[in-house]
Length: 218
Image (cartoon, rainbow, N blue to C red; front, side, top):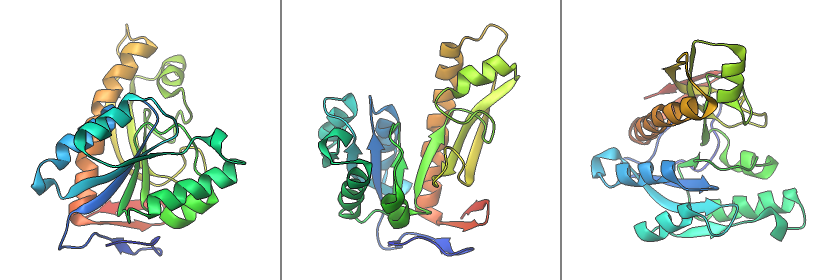
């Protein structure tokens, strides 16, 4: 089982004796979480969701975790003295489940130094644009405003920047002439979810290597 950050060019892979352990972080409805739970129901997928973390109570994603029998924890920023204390608490809770991979699935908080030190190279996120174009929280809106003909989704390794980590995979989504922010966002979400499930499974089964800006899966 992987329990540390990679050195340059080092391959990361789970133990061959067990499925890769996933901790999924959420802030809302948990549709990406549900897609991962559904995929993990097949033993051949090679992974299992061992815990779900959230930054708020009363969200549908926590109900999904409960229905699946997956333990969950909540760390609200307001319950901690500051963001550093929150980051340390989040790190401790995730560490307790010994994850091979930590997945931001609509998690709306930027993690800090403690979390990235612990899970660097193993914390991944998905963004609704083709990075490095249109980072931030309004990817589809910014893409439409710029007039691009192709947008999409990017799966990447989280670093200490905003959507600046190494790119694992990308999927293109055409921009239609009559697209609104809402219609484009919904089509990107479908492609984004499929990409997330595919590559989490591939990383779980085959491992991955990070060398500079390049990520190689398998």
